[in-house]
Length: 486
Image (cartoon, rainbow, N blue to C red; front, side, top):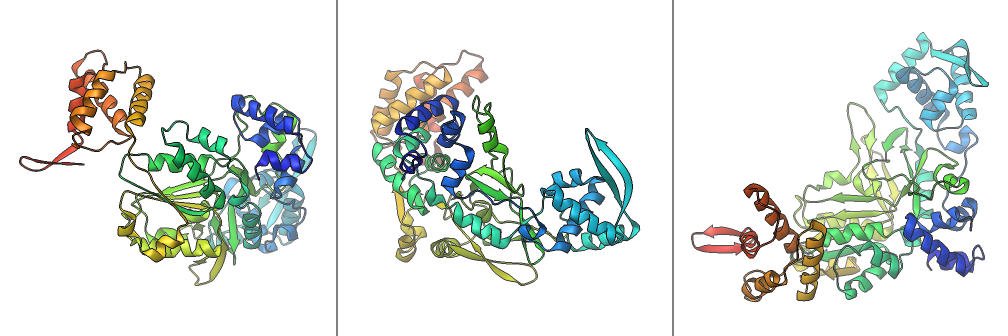
């Protein structure tokens, strides 16, 4: 069921509200939910209740799921490293409510780890100022020798598992229109678009294969953008006293209200009102790796100097898309990578190991996309093929698609499209089987023409000579008098 239909069925909005929100979304961007909130058709609370995956509020130390001493030590490290003095400063950094931070700082003061400096005035509010005592500095020094992590308080592993289950990617339905919009910059046959939709809504894994230069990576990235819901990603998680950083600004995009949407109070709440600020409201993430992928990269990365962990890519991609590009060209054998991830994906969890030797399960959810230029049977046996429920051949364009791509490239580049040049390329190059059609060729040819014209100091234009010269760069000489398509 799609979001609009579900909200109508639940009696939260009317069918005409969906149409108005869709029109608003076309001009303002963002998600359908953001448009509904911006138009005052539904409240943030109702929307999050419908999704049923908003994080719960925390009012006490027990609510955090973390050990008291762990949190008090983190507070002391933050005060020491950042030279903070007031509970409000610490609260902003540790992402915990002022009431919890005050309790932790009061306890540290009672133990002689903090000393009061007097009152500090901030506007109409007055707070006590604190500094780390001699005993506190010794405490911090010992704590830093065990872990140099200083930042937002992590969430417990149990809370992370629960949240992962609540915001499964299969709950984010992709309809035909949204998929077409995300793929609109690509010239693809309708059949491919129709077939890709079910794979997205099914979740799990899919395989894109075919000759290089026909858009597999571009399609994979567009598929990742087709998901509309936001999810909650923790800054870090805690396991047996160890900290694992999860939030990565290169992978996770915090929800920003697109132009024109964020002016209403209710929509602004959609961005800012998070009950537990240890979580970041994000778009569903996309993590990408290619030929550099090793099996070690799929395990926890422990830094022996800082003594805390960086989560592996697939953990950062939980709730989103994990793209393994150039599959089959990794240092690890394809079956090793598939055994490492497809099987855990089927089971819904994986096992990670701390440097202490402790092994723990972690819930996994997301869409794994394998993209390869190699024939599938050369990298996958029948048993492994069965474990990837959806696979798609991304083949070369038809003549009509090639022409459309060429026209679009010329238009976006400000060059005049020449039907005569393309007809000549078709007759003298492609139809003779010199090289096969590929979707990247028009862009390659136009870029080459621009480079040549700049070098010669002439106005940019596309000529037959420049087009044929560009085609020559698609060959590599193997032996004298012998050429092969690169």
